[in-house]
Length: 386
Image (cartoon, rainbow, N blue to C red; front, side):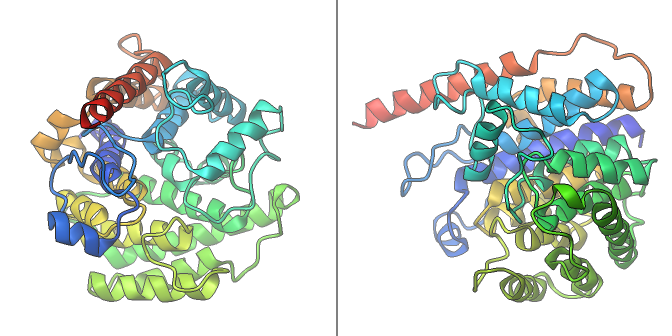
């Protein structure tokens, strides 16, 4: 497989997982099972228990943030937190008919909203992040993983720089670094030859290096200094064992570990807490390492933060398999597919220090149009229903 195909797989796989899970985000596993059985296609749920309607096949801000990262790398040749923030603010300020403070962004969580407010007030990128151990940094870093696949030390620092604008708690930052490292590692493997336990051990070693960099160079910017027993390090130390278990048993272990390390009890593996949902994405990716379709079906069907778990899983497996490993009907239903491919190809060109073949579609205009279209369809459906 050509390396360019893996770059395409990262953006396409992440967007597919995001779009597949978006319509059922927030629904419980049992409710999904009773209504749909398994999520095997892009769904149109209509109005359902207050869940925000999602246009079938359209991804959320998870993919938009990953595209913003890719745009920075393509434009600057390196990751720049200031350029990333600038892109996110342009997306948020675009006139789209949506919420005034979100512009073209779709499905933004409360923490990211607060970060937007901090950026608008001019807070520096290394001081604007919140006291969060959530998955919101991990969801956008896959482009960094494949871009810096041959430079592990630069990958760590670029990913920390990418996480800090929204996350200043070590747990969420370290989870983001692992997601980037996982993407990088799978981009170097051959499908069908991956030794899952070796990958898990490699991630533990990579996480240890990331902890050392974070503690040694970034401690002044964090809410609190990183602890050796950080909750994310608990995940990485147990991951090799989890990969030897059936998925259901591993899910129980993830939930026990997350509940023990969180301020809250009874944490679901599908929650936004990074040691839950990012760990779940790792387990699903490794459990279904040869079957990307099934991995994404599981990510959507388990409920909870389905779009993010799907985006994390799809991006990593896309780095291993390329886009053609995903179902053709999913690809056909995916919005802005050509733009995603164009950005992936330009990202590949930037990583190889060669010029892009074509002029890139404008990210802000494309996302503005998609959000406006979704809003218009939602209003039309809502007025018809009433």
